[in-house]
Length: 259
Image (cartoon, rainbow, N blue to C red; front, side):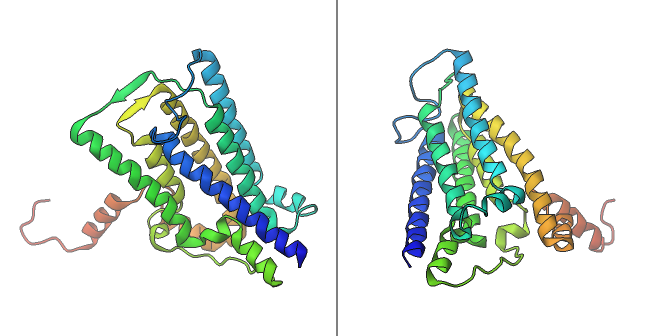
């Protein structure tokens, strides 16, 4: 019972650290409230800023991707109870994010600056991106994604059941709405600086590469079911216009309509 309680407390602490890192990320990317953000901090030379920032993002990318692979999960299952593996993954990811926020070197050189309606539209898309990212975690299993479900199941002394393949709400439109939300939040800004652009480009490249590995793992887990899902649903960009054209082709053309 003591071990199960320790795992549960560990999962709660890990989730709390994640919450802090996520809330700080909002201020970091937006230059709101937080004392040090993507464009606010101690000045440094350009070469050092680029090198340090790329190293920080590379560290996050390596940890985030390597620990998510099935081979790594099988390896560390020899040392770590399954009920706290996801919490450990979340905790380490969150700590590296906090390290990135702490050690980030701003590069405030402006790339673009908008105002008026264009600025408000970009701000709206930006916050829509954060909303999509947050909401998409609840459309599958938010507490499983961040390790709490596993810890609660272990605390009750029952077995962790496997997750079935589901495509709720936004998952019927794109396969990875969480990543789509992040991309919208990172790119949609009325004031893009060189440092913000470096952050956005590096994260976009990482997302596109990491999704290839995740898709491979999902095919291995769900087989033909996921392959059919891939055929029907795009990865990141909704097929709104393609679907409209398909519907138009299927509908009969009115007599006298232009060709």
